[in-house]
Length: 152
Image (tube, rainbow, N blue to C red):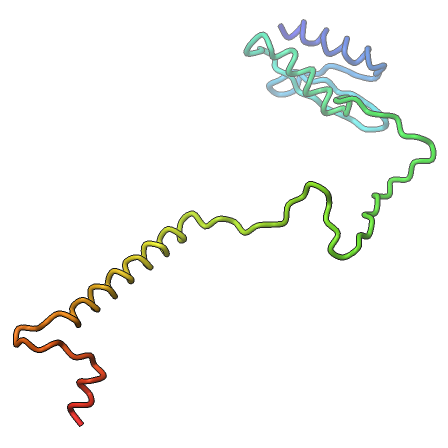
């Protein structure tokens, strides 16, 4: 399989008009040394491939390493690589179909706050009911304000 991988790599390099390459054997794996645009690339590939896709994976790795992946559009001669500036917009201008920003919904504390408010209301109602109900002696319970008046 390593020999077929070598032939596939050689075919790939010749297809891309790369003539300066050599196959070497490193410590554990075979490799190909490629000279391209004044740079030296060393790409290791498996000596014993693990599955039927390893040859295709090796070619795609080599293609990415050499920069042949993806389609590139040729740049026009008068191209300057300056980023486009954003247009200044009048204050209050809003793009069509854009909604105003809204606050994020609180999914944890909002229900707890509602529960707390309901419990406080229930406690207040219970306390109000106790103050209006007669005590054991038959008198009505007095509030803290009236108790302080009697002590004076």
